[in-house]
Amino acid sequence: MPQNSAVYAVSRIRSRERTLFNRDAVKRLAASSAKEALRMLIDANYGAMPDASILDTDAMIESELERTYELVREVTTKPSLTDIFFLASDITNLKLYIKLRITGSKETPAVARGGVYEPAELKRMVENGDYKELPGAIADAMADIEADIAADRVDPAMISVKLDQSYIDYAISSGDAFIQAYFKATADFDNLIALARLSALNAPVERLKKLLLSGGDIPKELIIKHYLSPREQLSRELPAGQFKEQLKKGLEEYALSSNAMALERARDNALMRFASRGKNEIDTIAPVIGFLLAKRQEAKVIRLIMTALRNGLSEEVINERTRVLYGE
Image (cartoon, rainbow, N blue to C red; front, side, top):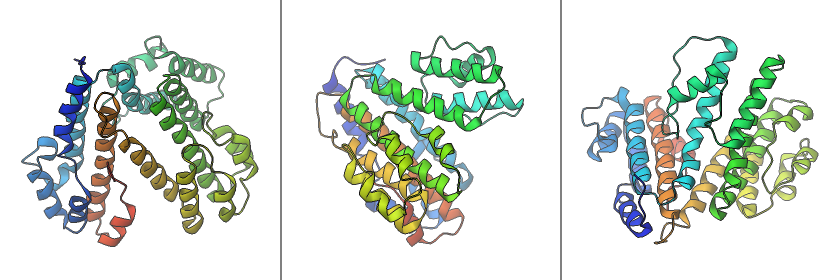
């Protein structure tokens, strides 16, 4: 149940922050064998699964995230704001269920956990085409998608774009300055990632126009204009807004690697550093949201390391792929 005291919420979060993996712990994981890394996770009570095997790594991560979600829901003083970040899982599941319905697939999918809605609720909504329980912007996007299905003009990629756009619009409409900046940056980075991926496929610029998101600080027209520009030019022409320097760095790394993964890593790092700014506030919701995002980033890093160790990747390669952690 949400709390009324921000100070109480922050004190609870502070106690859990001590359990976060720091850079030294992550380096030790990366330098270990898969078996040794598993032992380190068990010793840290990660996911509260003391009898876990190497095959249970994903279950450990999901269990740890579920514990985090329970804490955030318990202590938040502004559930309407923390729910915006939980909605990410609901957006993922809506995409999944609508695509399963379109294809007629009967498979039992691996759903995202930690949403505002239970996956079964979302499945029922999609089966019935009834979205009145969803936030307005997201319900409108689903109605638009239903209209596309009825007119037999379904484009799976556009399903994702329409839902992502509705999510960004809903978040920005919250009026919260932190959330607005966070999702504006998300739109900018995701647009640049789309540019990089489509460029690698030599896709026509018309495809890019369809996939770009609104709401960021970089005008979509500018991204379209520079779609065919040399990669080295993008970092000079495109970055804008509050995250200008982070966008510039990401584009510079992309120019060197020719790989969209450089922009994905830059996005994750920039947003984590931004979330870390409110870490020491004592009377706002910022530390609660920051901790939620920190645990998600930690989970991503641990999942990456454990997968890499199982596949025999070197410590050097693993360290190159890890992300910034909370407070770094």
